Length: 177
Image (cartoon, rainbow, N blue to C red; front, side):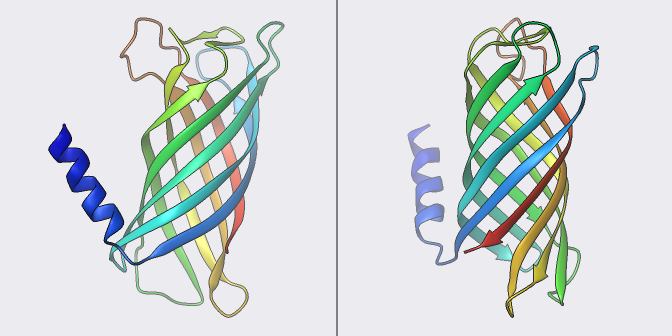
């Protein structure tokens, strides 16, 4: 485990590319496997980008998410996450750069282990998010970001109770600062 941490630290610290991207999010939709509907809002901050090639970027960031449900009890959770994000670009840069992204295994603290009828064994969870995005030239560079995605929190079956918490439709809007 120490060698893995050392390797990740070396890769992370030796890359010259910064990110400094701030995103605001809002979304909602029906919870799969349940009668409840979830809504969300939040903020993400990507602080580091490792550019393997013009087609592959890995971002590191932190995220704050609030999820509210229409169930009668346990109506709200707050989640604090650290995430890696893999972004895959289909072509070289142009006026606006579309890309596919995946956030997986982002360790998270959730403020409650229950949201409506959804149960987690404890307050440890992972954030997963998958979607489509675009970087758009706004002030002479690709600094405006628009994302559409699905967001999910679960403990990856590390613990016995693992009802996932889903937000099927999330829109992020942000700026590279």
